[in-house]
Amino acid sequence: MSRNTPEVPESENQLDQLKWEVAEELNLDDDIEEKGFANMTTREVGQIGGNMVKKMITFAEKEMAEQGADVID
Image (cartoon, rainbow, N blue to C red):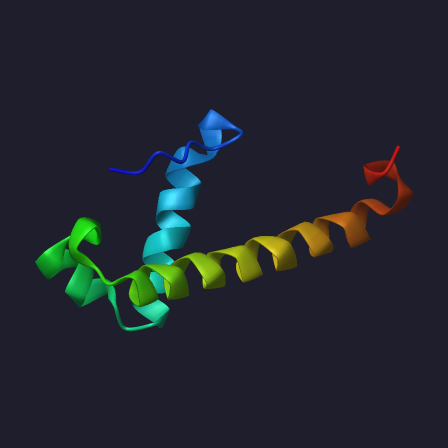
């Protein structure tokens, strides 16, 4: 069971959706359904987490670009 909790609890569902989206892109979704996340290798889980971070950074960068200096203030 994960000890990580989202900084914004309301985002938990969206983060789970993103996790599954990334797993599907990496062709790991079938393995997860078979084995469950607890039985995935560290490498597989790391791939999912790393790609989630990349997508979240891209999302944040787009938001910052749209809002301009308002984000920093």
